[in-house]
Length: 168
Image (cartoon, rainbow, N blue to C red):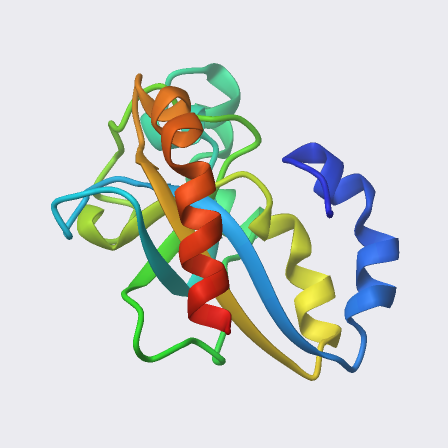
C-alpha cells in the first residue's frame, strides 16, 4: 500500500527503496475522461504521466493562471516505456484530489479520449526510475466528473478481480 494522493508522496523514500532494481507490476485505479469502451469498468495502461491539478486544467484560480504556462516546466511529464501492449493506453493526469468536472483546457492537453485521472502516479516518478522494469495496470473504475466517487465505489471490487485474472 503506497497511500492515496499526497500520502503517496510522503511515502516516496520507502517506495523508492522497495522498487529499486525490481521488476514492478504497479496496479492502480483511475477515472477516464471519455469511456471509449462504452462501459465501466475496464483495464488500461499508460505511457505518459502528467501533473495536472483540476484548477490548472481549468485556469480557475490565480495560482493556476500564474503557473499555467510554466506548469509543464515546473512539473515535467514523464514517459513509461514498459507498457502492456494488449491494454488500451491512457495519458494519466495526476491531481491531488478527485475532479468533480470533466472539463479541461484542450489546448494544453492530449485528446480527451486518451486521458485518465489518477491521484498517485506522478508522485512515484523517481520510484519508477529506480525499478528494473515497470508494467502498469490501471483499473478504469469511473468517468471523471460529479459521479466519479459513486462509480469508483460501485466498480472497485470488480476491477480488483479483473486485475487479478489479468495478472494470473
